[in-house]
Length: 267
Image (cartoon, rainbow, N blue to C red; front, side, top):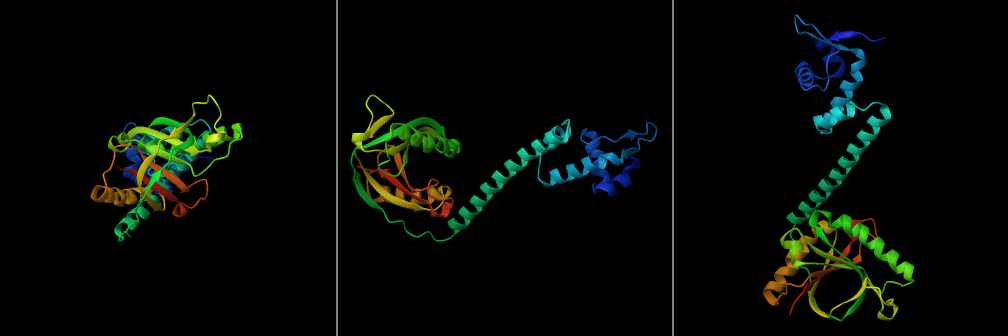
């Protein structure tokens, strides 16, 4: 059995202030069950308590009012649950991103150990590759799709990888936050199938090389040290930078264990 109550009583029932309830009425988020035409007094039904509790919790999760309105408009509990689950998934992703940034900031505040820099001449290398114009915010998702596809193609041809996977990043990728990215997996030259232009040869190139230890979110720290070394001791080229994923998501679920070889092209 439902019962109508005054706004003050409803405020006690749902722990929302009368001021907040009036605001939610004004924006059609939680409309009173009845409004006295003479006095303007609002009365709420006890069946609205559940919606009020839901609104209060969703606002505590920083869900936008427009999104809460859409959720409350869902015709059945299952639809509400699906909409809420999508919001919680987004929140979990945001919490993960925030945690990664906090960890990265704490690492940045510490004195950074010098990163050893070596030099090498990389010979021509046969690879299976996929390339695309990729925006920086989308690069993780793009790589997450590219490498399974590459390994799937190798499996179809019965070809084994001949080394760690990697990627090249054009100068535009860093300057404009969008540019040409090539994901690749090395293969032995004698295993390259004929007439398949997805296989190619990376040219011989001289590099200054540093190993980044830890999550990809902190790669900029190693880039900074390596790039500074190149600027101070070498002659850098505008050729794509090469990353080789010695230990990455394919090897471990712990980003702290990642090992990424960063190869800066030099004369």
